[in-house]
Length: 523
Ligand SMILES: *[C@@H]1O[C@H](CO)[C@@H](O)[C@H](O)[C@H]1NC(C)=O
Ligand SMILES: *[C@@H]1O[C@H](CO)[C@@H](O)[C@H](O)[C@H]1NC(C)=O
Ligand SMILES: *[C@@H]1O[C@H](CO)[C@@H](O)[C@H](O)[C@H]1NC(C)=O
Ligand SMILES: *[C@@H]1O[C@H](CO)[C@@H](O)[C@H](O)[C@H]1NC(C)=O
Ligand SMILES: *[C@@H]1O[C@H](CO)[C@@H](O)[C@H](O)[C@H]1NC(C)=O
Ligand SMILES: *[C@@H]1O[C@H](CO)[C@@H](O)[C@H](O)[C@H]1NC(C)=O
Image (cartoon, rainbow, N blue to C red; front, side, top):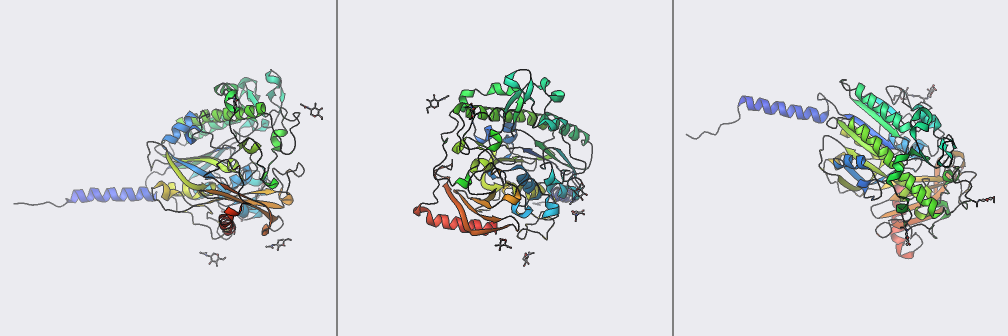
């Protein structure tokens, strides 16, 4: 007798339970929900081992990246802290928030939009901010957008008040009275014998510990202050970086002759520090001496190593099986490429950031490099999907009538391994007060009322195309026909953006095509 038995009632029941459990996990309803931790580094370009930077000493971020998605082409919306962070945290572009400087609060000025932490809070999460997450001050209503974004007032380290104080040892000696750009210190000489990022990590670990036994999931944002200038970090990190490694850091040390002047940022903040202001660096184009250039780079890398070390301490306190983690920089920083320093521009070095995302849902044994073009506005919808909250709709245009929507795209399908075959682009922008670099108004960071020109830049997988056009600050409109500069760089041949191809007839049709694409995307 041959009898193939069908599934027993018990087997069916087990199958049913399994299906229900996985469905519940997928929709995030009854199963334990993931905690979400977002770590922002201030002014961090991808100077990390996992991004192929052989000078970097970042063992903790590199180890973290082993199990993560590493986005190789992630871009900030504007290379300035407050516009970039508010864009990231609202999922909307600087043009929608009408924020290009530090001095307005978009809820009062543009629209009462739902932020990333607020969305998590609305869906049952406890939300907490440690360190520099929102840019402090007017652009977050002097409260880091508390209480709308956070369940408790944001934590700020008490040593934050000394960030721009003259607390660097003069000539490396014992007397603290200088506001140097390059400022390695002994901790015991510093106010409260500590530094802001050390305090922020201690607080984050305390917070994580207090939430251990809570059934309510949390969204924690931790913002490191470094490697933003000044480069104030524990002295021992300098020893890992021989100065000689930083002389020939880039071959691209000259201002490109065919760069429009409006594209240039004169790095006024570097010049103003006590160790640079008497050097008579020619305004606006410099250069900075080779020796000082090497010293700045060395201090940047040492600052990165310092926060990497603190990131390792944070990671040791997290339960990776229960936590979605996103790590990113708010924008990049030029370390002498094009003879340029600092952020404040539309160049690749100022806009490209590290973006590393890890979820227990997608266990990986090694870094999964994702080469598609991504933007910081993508982070909000992506984290929403990774936490299995109701998906965030795409904004209709600028979405002024939609309190909760995103102008970015969710990267979740990419993490699921779905190749959507899309040819994504990144759109970023930078304002200027005029055609030429100036000290007054400061063309590195013009105030809204002084903005006369907006540079819009489009990054495709092959090109960067930038158009500088007339901008009317009083009604936030732009005139695409009134052009102050145009740039086209082919990243397949010129990853340093040294050769502006915009004037070459051979590139006419691609230039026209990219211009059309940019105008259509900006709207
Ligand atoms: C900004 O903060 C003030 C208190 O300082 C508060 O009265 C006001 O409602 C806040 N603005 C918005 C739009 O939330
Ligand atoms: C903004 O929206 C929040 C809910 O997202 C609401 O609580 C608040 O009252 C609104 N503020 C204003 C000024 O409309
Ligand atoms: C940098 O490169 C130049 C030649 O391009 C070489 O002469 C010099 O020794 C190098 N300096 C260092 C510190 O490696
Ligand atoms: C910088 O210029 C000032 C005024 O011209 C001069 O007194 C000073 O010696 C110069 N410093 C250096 C380092 O060249
Ligand atoms: C988007 O906005 C336009 C213009 O305001 C409107 O005509 C259209 O119906 C909106 N679409 C959706 C899906 O809301
Ligand atoms: C904005 O203002 C400028 C100059 O005053 C004007 O030419 C332009 O038409 C205005 N644009 C809009 C959309 O109102």
